[in-house]
Amino acid sequence: GSVGAAGGSSYDSVSGTDYVDGAGNTFGGVADSGQFAYQAVTGNFTLTAHVNSFLGSNPLAQVGLMMRDSTDPTAMNAALFLQGGDAVYQNRGADGADTAIAPLADVSTPQWLKLVRSGSQITASVSSDGSTYTQVWSANLNLPTNTFDVGLAVSSNTTGATAGAVFSNVLIS
Image (cartoon, rainbow, N blue to C red; front, side):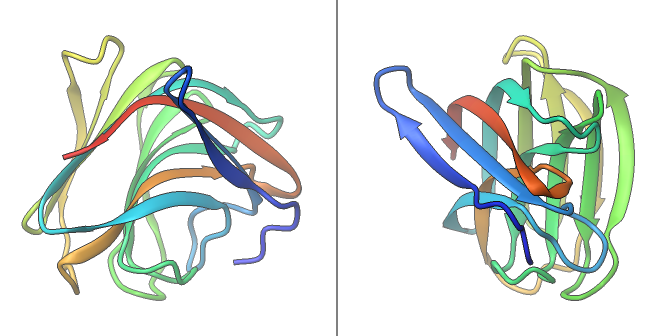
């Protein structure tokens, strides 16, 4: 969707960190707007990342992990975000449908996030240390395809400015 201010993503091979910044009204509703750095993945996967830091002036800015069936703003998706001091799970069960949102746990950066797809089961988990994860949500979704765009997402929740996040230890397996 329309994001206003331009965002982007980069990888620093010296520090091993990914930086993603994005504007946009939000990931949610019936259409998303924000920055999504992704790769296509077929079949089951586990996506983990450490959110080292997050800078956004809007308390509803979002940073986290997302899977989408396409990059269309109305695409089916599932995500685990840090937003306003909470871990938030959300999904859009079909292209163009409204997004279901569930605030889950009081967490802040730095934080480890994990999003897992196993068949139609999507599981979201958080961890403060990267080894012991707490599952915060699990849902069965009617997945229309076996290949998804999987990656890092940031939205400033405003079109006038970007929010930025530093990720490390990003792994898709």
